[in-house]
Image (cartoon, rainbow, N blue to C red; front, side, top):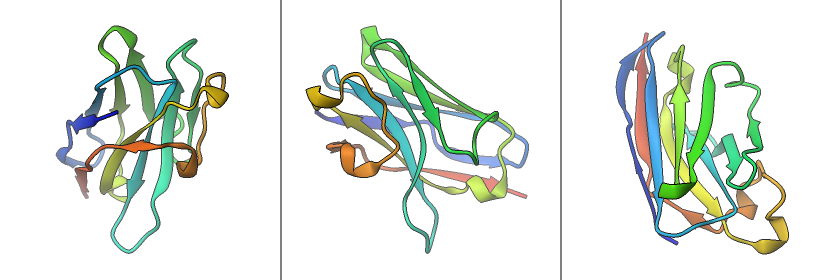
Length: 124
């Protein structure tokens, strides 16, 4: 599975960005993770493509929305009310393990496929 992420950029605090991640084939769930300079990579949000169940990190709940377009094998991350602490490289990931087809995970070890990162910079 190949993943192509896009949509990063520079935005002022309080602004919005939308990230996209297109997969080369259908998967069971897809997620977004991010890594800020000097920090560990952390979970942001994930969605199960069948049924649309979602999961969010506490730090983005209420500000970020993950959605999917199954016909395009694409997920989106709408990021509103951005804060400087949201600055990071954002990575999309996909899980194609049939044993997890009914779940959505926040653990990066359960995602087998990763896209290239896209930089999001929020200025204060």
